[in-house]
Structures are given as structure tokens and as C-alpha cells.
Image (cartoon, rainbow, N blue to C red; front, side):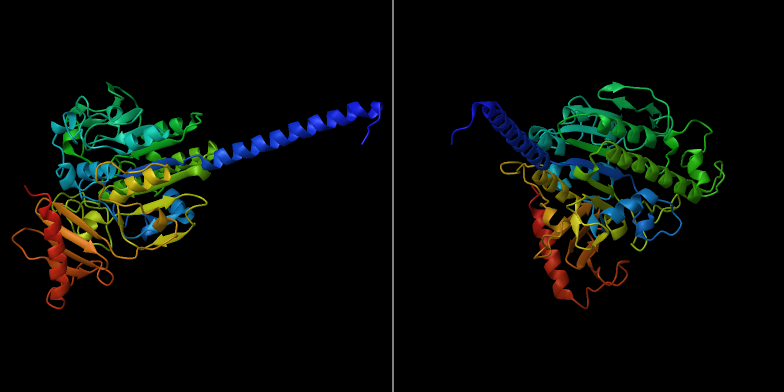
Length: 460
């Protein structure tokens, strides 16, 4: 077809514009595809010794925890989530490695001296060390508690940045642990002012706010609501929970109250508000839709006798921290990932903190092939409802003189090696009050055999 000369310029211009437009659309499509395929941000938050029954969304009718309750409505509330240990140091070490305490050689709470020396073996590989090669920037804000000697600090174990404390607990305003100031930015001791819960939440907010094309992994282990310790107080100072004035006013409590129950509630509400600010920062920064949020308590609330501070609750579970009764190892857990995890879900299927490492590595686009043996498994299909477990996995526990195993609806437990294991059906007896050993001896015998086989692999 011949085109008149006076129309040729218009025709050629149209072709050029069409080509430019098609290229632009194609580039936009590719950009959108790249954005969709970008690995998710990961925000992993832990509370410290929070009880199973301490949140509104877990049945507490007095405690004011609106932000965690909302997180549960927006995601998944887990009713059978286990921490791999009932004590702080070990629960954190197993979370970060995805391996049982017996496998990593750390099954005790670090002493005062050990907190500032060698801790978790340098042979162990931590979550951030898996994620950094996948393009993640990594940060830890809060409680470390797995060894802070040279070579063992967070920034020497995969985290790009760290702001927090080395030991197991600190004074909430002076950041003192057993008479020693304990607040660090990377490897340098720092002196700040403010409520520790707020300091760690603010640090996380600032990190989220930073514009960066790379996804982030934030490990946010709060020290709240860990019970107060006499060794962290000044002479003559009462050993009581500390919280901002406004947190007491939420309940119409006097900020100077000496009621430990009221003071504890204020601490939990202050923690909830701090978490709320971090979640709001995700929204403000426009990354909430592509951020996986996992929150849980490192272990159950402590129920130590005759101390006068046991005002938290693991209801309806038995006992608490440092034991292997359900109150020590079954903990509240909430998971949210818009578009992937359906809102307002309750997941009753059991899983364990050891599962988080393989799950996070998988969703980040990595693989554990050729890596140290993981004792957990990828539970992303379970979280997203793609599939349910075909067979009930056994979960093994051993701490101090306690031993336990859960598989399916059954659990065996003993408090001392010299005792026989007891057997409980957790679907009908969460309080572990009815020993079924005589009624179902074959079930008990099978579980005891499994436990002994598991334990034998760690014996020299």
C-alpha cells in the first residue's frame, strides 16, 4: 500500500509511539512480575515467659492486648505450637538453629559469666546465615542470651545490625543484669534512656522505615514480660514489674501499686502496644502485604513456688516454664501473611519452633540440601492450608531431669529418670490430670520405645 507523502510522517510517528508504548507495557509487566516474585520480608517476634492464657485472643478476659488480638484476627492463632525448650537460652538457640538442644550441645540456661563468653557453638548455622546469601538484610533487636563473647555476638553470626542485651533479663529502665550494665549496639556498649520494650520496638520501626530494595529479616526478641530479678535492682529498690504510667492507666490502676498482678498486666499491655507500633510501621512503609509476621512466647510462664511473682497464667495447661508439662512448652503463637494465610484461622495441628528455620529458608527461596541436619520440617503447606499432616510427627523434649514426647493426641512425661513415664491424651485432658498408663499400656510402651531410640543417638 502506497502512503501519500504528506501522511508518511504521521504514519511513522504512530509506529514509533506504538513501539515505545508496547515496550513500556512489557517493562512494566516485567517489573510487576519481579515485584511479585520478590521474597517476603520476615518479622519474627518473641515474648519472654508470656503465659499461654495471658492474651485476650487466648481467652483472658482481663488482659488488654488489642494489637495481638487483632493480629490473630488477621492471621492464624495456633493452639498446639511448641517451643523446643522450657527455658530462655535453649529455646532461642533451638529456634535459630532448627535443631534439638541435644544436637547443638546446649541444653542449659547460660550462667552470668557464660552470657558474656562462648555460648552456642560456632559450628551451628543460624537463620540469618541462611537468609543473607538469599539477598536478605538482617537485624536483631532485643534479647540475645546465647553467648556474647568475641565471635559469638549477633553481628558475628549473620546479623547485619544488633541493638539489645546479652543476658537473660535486664532492668526495664536501667538495662542492668546482675549489677552489670547490659545494652549494646553491635559490639559497642551504649547508654540510652527509655523503657526497654519501647527501645527495641523503635529500633525495629526505624529499620523497617529504611528504604531498601532488598527484603529484610528482623528478629525481635523482647525481654517482656520476663519477671523482675533482685540482682537487677538497686539497693532498697522493690523487686517489681516495671511499666510506663500510661499502661497502668489503661486498667485504672495506680502506677505506684504494689500488686504484682496489676503490675504484670501493665507490662503485657505495654508489650502489646510496642508490637502494635511495629505492625503499624509495616503498614506505613507499604510492606505489610509482603511481610510474614510470626509471634510467639519463647517458653511458658514460670510457676515457681514461694516466690510471690507467679501472677501470669498458662490456663488451661499444667505447670509452667522449666518443666515439660504443657504449661512449660506449649505456647501462644500467631502468624500473619496477607494473601497467603487466611484471616481469622485457628490451627490445632501441632508443630514446633524447630520448624521455623526450614520454613523460612524455603519461602525465602533457599534450600537446606547439604546443610546441617534440621530437626524441623517445612510447615508452609500446613500454615497456608494447602495440606494437612498425613502422619503425626513425634516431638521430643528433655530438660534437666524431665523427659517427654508428644505424638498425635498422646504425650508421655516423667519428672525424673527414676520414675515411670505417665501417659496423657491431650485432646481430652489438656491439664494432664489423668494418667492412662494402665488403660493403654501398649500406647505408652510404643512411645517410650521411640523416646529411648531418639535419646540413644546422642549418647556417646
